[in-house]
Length: 329
Image: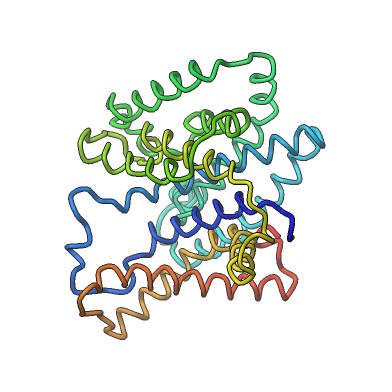
């Protein structure tokens, strides 16, 4: 581990913490709950999480495809299929209304709507199956970076501002369709290392997301498909991936935790909705309510930290009892 580059793992850690923040930063109530949601909604910067995971997926899958060929795809597919089926079954048992007919049960709980992370698996299944074709396409046709980014931006501008999501069936499918993520796949395969971007620029670019939402009022029902999300997610990922830092250059305590969380991201992704559901009920029943100066800043940090620690603990237990396949390990 010592000489391994830490940048991809740092991105994974940032992305999984963003996922938890989006879903569970509210679970510890505080006195300034209304004040924590300003008109600018700066918390929307965390929408980089899924795009970053897609960029990293395509980056490493491309390397694997070049090294091992198409034989690398099916093992990857099955390594995701097992946790998808297991956790979807868990959430199905917990949340399903069995009074609904079988069609409603299937469409609601097994096609990306069953729990907050399920759609990500649906997206990845489509992209893995299409990966050889996308690889062939960009190998055969060398896209100019400028043309690629212009076409991508036009696509996301159209999706966000044309009323595209006012069409009922398209709105229901939302961001689960593979076509919306092809620009991320191509960017991850081809362009992550082509531009020298300073790390601070990558961080600052995330402000584009809340600024676009506040000033331009996009009409999409998915903030992951905004032009600003595409731009900032790419700039952030590219800037971090170019940081040439290995684990042995980082404080041992910090590097150990980065490595631990990065190796547990899929488990955390699958577990966090369940942990949030349980904690939310427990905290409501306990009547816990923070009330002091600055509680609006501390409560989300405590919420995210608590969820993360519980997810890590459960992930550790799952691995120890040799059921790692349930979390992709």
